[in-house]
Image (tube, rainbow, N blue to C red; front, side, top):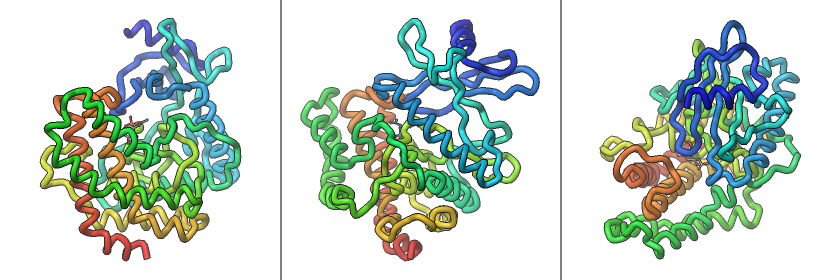
Length: 359
Ligand code: GN1
Ligand code: MG
């Protein structure tokens, strides 16, 4: 494997000699490695893109190129350092954004931004504020982006579509697990109408579609190692047309609980109001300039929307026999789903305070 990875990495226009390639990261979808190089040259992130999940990797890489070029221009115009504050895609030696290996697997490389750190959960309101700010800044940088982007995963955060997939998974019962899930199924069904009624506001254009990241787990925001300032948002695989609510909501999902997203002790899972407040402050500081009132009105709800959606996705995958998300243990997707549902309940209990905080 090591030699193969070396061979793959050497297809890309890297500076400096490769000294090591190590496995990295927590992703549920791609395989990620860090390529270390000698001397002053940067280190790099090498990823095998999961082509069963991203059916058109070239279109995905083209989206990433357009968006990072735009951000780079915005950072430069604002007097920042584009090498730190924008993700940099590294092309192959023959100028392509990806390399296809002998097995037909797709690989891509980006520059690893030095002296930055990413967390799987936030332990202080200060960190929550930085996370919110990072997402707000990212969206603000893209608020004037006008180029067309491919929809690389169809209906990614379309909750109507997620319910269709859920219904199909229930009907198929591919892994014979429906019988054990009466409680979870009832729980999800009791929220279907509310979710679909929200979706009608997207369909009728009340809530504008913009360019969003769509996977803003806190571990996708790189923070400065010394100051904890949000430097750059990474993992742009899912950048495409979307709602700001998806990015804000995923930040709320991953930052407000004291637990990771597969916590099995559900008593520990809850939405912490001070963390929510800090995300809101950080986010609105960066994003208030372009948001519409219709968007602001849905910010509190968006935490619930995205948490519920991902809960449905984890449970759908559990019903299908764990074919989408990487799992590390028995019933991992079930545990992940239960954590999301518990977190939704906690948000529901505090929704008046969350709404008040936004106001
Ligand atoms: C996946 O692989 P990762 O962690 O970046 C998923 C997200 C989920 C997330 C849940 C393309 O992202 O939508 O929110 O897992 N990405 C895709 O942890 O499905
Ligand atoms: Mg990620």
